[in-house]
Image (cartoon, rainbow, N blue to C red; front, side, top):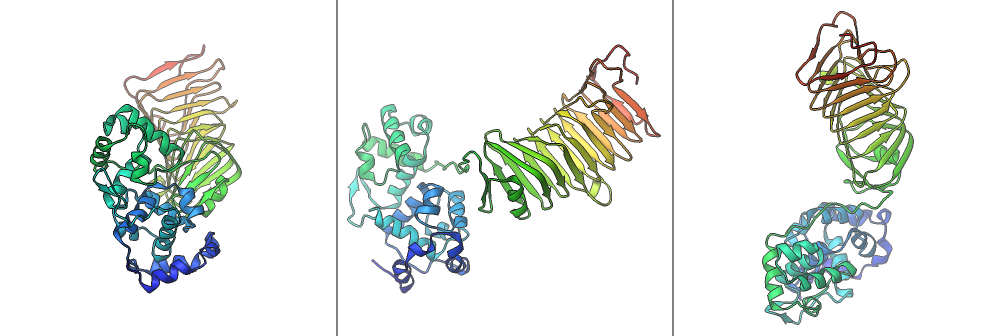
Length: 427
C-alpha cells in the first residue's frame, strides 16, 4: 500500500489531543487550504473510508472520530458520497479529516486487503460500500418494497442496522434469509438509492446549518450568520427578547414552541412549522415604505397572545393562525398578504386587524377574521378581502370601522361571509 509523508505524519499524530473544536484550528486551516487530498489509499482503504462517511451518524463523526463539527455536518449533508474526490470537495474536509476516518476504519477492522469475495462482491470495494450504504440507511419499506427483498430478509437487515451498523459483507451475509439474491437486489437498488439527509433533531436542541447546536433561541439567532437556517427541534424555548438583525430562516421539526416575550425583526425572515407566543412582535423597516422594507414569510405558524406591530414592512402569511392576539397593527406603510390564515382576537376596545396610514391588507384563500370585541379598523388605508369569513362576538362592535380619506378603498370580493352581532354589520 502507498503512503505519502503527509499521511504518515497524520496517522502518527496524537489524535486524542484534538477532540474538540477549540483544538482543531490548525487542522481545520490545513483542511480549508488544501486543494486536494495529498494522500493515497488502496481501493480497500478507500472503500472503507467512504463506507464510514456514508453510514455513521453525526455523533460518531463528531465525537468518536473527532472530526471538526463543520466537517461532520458537511459530510452528512453531502451523502451519498461517491468517491474520494466528492469527499474532498466537502467544506472543512482535508488530510486531517481523512486521516481520522482512516484510523477509525483501521481500528474497527473495516479495511480488508485480503480480497474476500461474498456472492461475487469483493469486500472493501466501491460495490461493497454501495450495498452496505443501502443496508445501513434504507428504511424497512425501502428494503421490502423498493429493493424487492424477501420480507424476512428486509426485517433481518433493518433490525440489525437499527442496533449497529453492518460493517462488512460477511456480516450482512450472516443475517437470516440474506443470500446471493438479496445481494443482487441491494446492488441494483443502490443505483437509485439516496440517503435521507434530514438532520436528526433531538428535543430541546436548535441546529444551525452553519454547524452550531443551541438550546436557547436567542443565542441561536444572535450567533447565526446572514442567510443561516435554524432547525428548531421539538420542545419549548423561552426568551425575554429576540432581535433578528440578519436574514434568517427558522424551521420547526416536531411542533416546537417559541415563548418570546418581545421579538424585533428588521430584515427578511422565513418562519415555518412553529408555534410562537409572547407579547410583542415588531417588524420595522426603519426607513421608506413596505416596498423596500423587510419581508417576513410565515408558513404553518401559530401566533398567540401578541400585538404584531408593523412599520414599513411586509407580512406574507400562508396557512398561519393568529389566535388570541392583541391585534395585527399595520401602523405605517405596512402590508399584509395572507392566504388561508386565521385572525382571532379578544382584547377589549381593540380591533383584531388595525390598518393605518398608507398601509394595505389583502386576504384571500379561505381566511377568517373573528373578534370577540371588534373586527377591522381601517384608518386612511386600503383593503382587499376575497373568500374571507368575518365574525364577531356578542359585544356591541361592528365588523368594519372605516375612518379617514381612503375608507372607500376597500373591496369585498366573492365568497365573503359575515356573522354579526345584534347591531348588524355596518359597511
